[in-house]
Image (tube, rainbow, N blue to C red; front, side, top):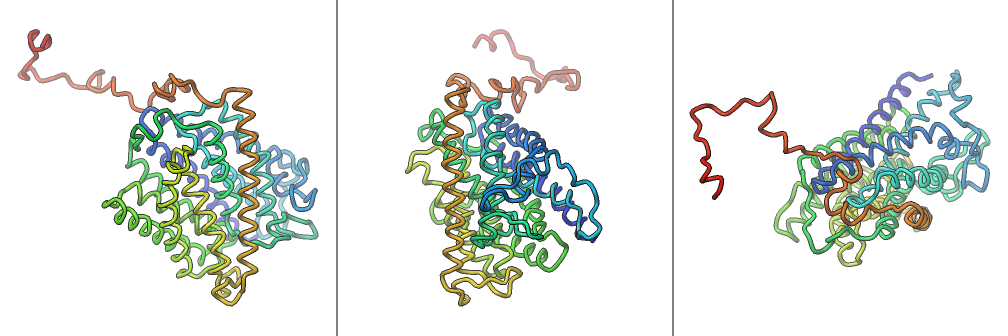
Length: 438
């Protein structure tokens, strides 16, 4: 056992787990005040449910022995993680460390989808959706992308047969979640007042805190995917940092030129767009290539978030504009910018590699997009018909927090009252009855 590698994998898993509460803050600040708790509960609900399903059968679906042309792992091979607790003295790290690391990837992927349907989804229906979607969409796609051939065991078709590069989940996580978000937003329909009423973020400091936590946790997401404390992890770390900074700058420049003001929401969104785009490409490009990917992602995602108004779908928190578009940018541009000196040792179009890698990356990205969109549309439509996925109009208007959780994020009724609040000084002027009547 390499204790240094093991420590890095477990630390990275903890960093990625922190990303989901960070996402809850990021999304929670972006919705209106009456929806903040429901928005955050959708992330925390995913944390709870996916953790259980991953242990029961999810890991086996994703990383069990292949049972069909690279499409799925053996469902019952590691049921309940049976047989994985015994230490293998020849392994570089415990298999349970890898189990934990991949578990938190599954959690964050499902949580990302929730931003597309903010303000209008019933929590119970969301939890049923999480269970079904992670089973029939995420677990198989994780097998396609992350299960590499080893010890004579055949893995997933995208990683092995196709040979596409996706170091940390541009396809399995971001394109997957973005396509699912688009499908679910179409199934549930638009929010009441969409396009007519202002639906501004209610707490931008929460958004900024969430973006900061996501950036921090993303070093575990990307550099942790090296599964070792080595040169690859170091290169990936640097690429993740500089590409994200470039994306934030790109988004802010677009805002400045288009709207006249660079905004805090734009900075936070640009950060996430850069993190998404560098995720698949962080091991295959140079830092300069990473910054180019970041700038392109920042600019294109800033422009793409406005498509929902032109095309008529209500992607509440821009899951499509940021995660789907950013994931496509990062995955496909590997075919152009891959540097043979980078750890992946692949050559893109600009480095004499020809068009073959570009074609492979495009096929991998579009395959996940189509599979996720179609299956999610079917799942969402069935749940909508069977158990009423969307809240009633009256509950949406009054506030989904009260309707679904019987709580509110901010209890302003307690301000100025209670035993912990001092009474007004006796010399303060009191209000007369006439003034009250007036």
